[in-house]
Image (tube, rainbow, N blue to C red; front, side):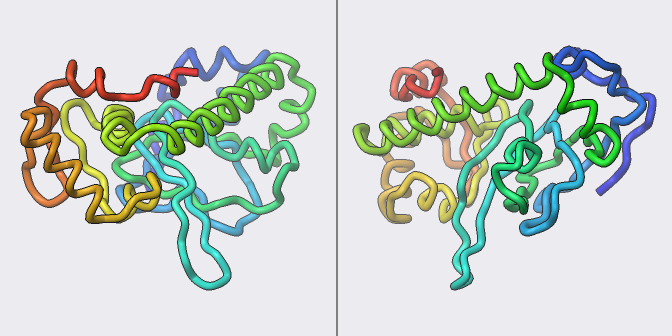
Length: 220
């Protein structure tokens, strides 16, 4: 984890969320691939804005099994549930590639946030959209074949034309077997929509066809 320059310009889509100037409180941090952004089970100390990169949210069960809850693409926010008091301890968040985040230390800004109607309005909309997205994902998983769901996931998680995610995690997240997932990847490669480069890395050759296959309910 590296600190970025203090004079780095905060994007307007972040500053516009608040009615007060967050610049004196904001801390920039860079996280390497596979580095923890939020440690599972810790008390929340910061509100985290993911400005660049991709991350995954996970939960470790008492039997040691790890469940992938969700994948996230910047820009997004972590720690809103803990800030609102819905849960005391954080779930784990890990960087899937190089991530850049803005951290707001709650010890310094919590009282400002709780009295900032502009921020609270944003937070309500953010939580509503997340709930709609989760509902849509559940309905999609129940009613669409894997090829459609995978096409959607590839488009959401690809870095430009390159897709690079662990098959085991994606299979678990989509609720299918590892073998079934590999079969659908082969189908997409045979259709000349994807090109298998090495191991889990693919290049998107035909964005138009992939977008046609993708389920659009996540646009909610």
